[in-house]
Image (cartoon, rainbow, N blue to C red; front, side, top):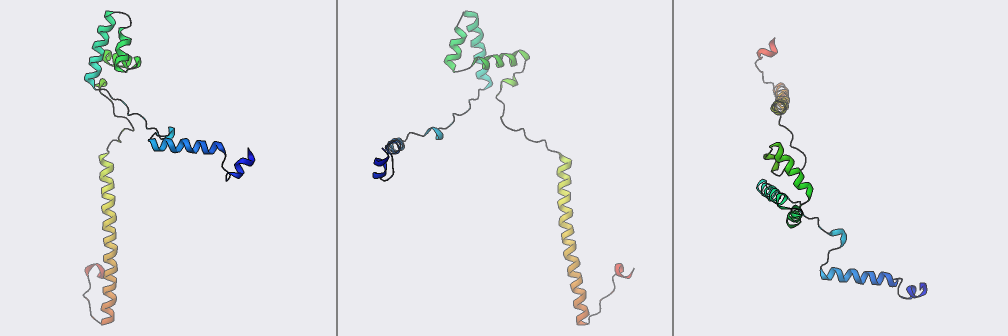
Length: 158
């Protein structure tokens, strides 16, 4: 077997077969197991949950196995029914609405927002002040070089 693979350019029979299968699967459009997409998460409206709860109550009163048939027909788990019943018993009709998944948005702190705005404004004004000081220094040096007399400002005189 080893000699045969060397004669065939180093490819073994197994690699050739696997490669042929892979090529056939790709040409037919069959996705590989690593690329299979996850199904979308199901969300249920409050109206749907309430209608299922009503049907489940009727099915439970009618006889044995009717609730299981309802769950199979709708593609639900018994845990769905149990949690929806618990929410209904607590009187949380809003709890039957689908909840937004993921991290909760951070609460806006109005003082922190205003503080950040004022810090940016101070930094901008400080930069403008520094530029103005440089311009004034250049003007003073230029007036000295040109021999132009400048009136003393009240801040410099004191």
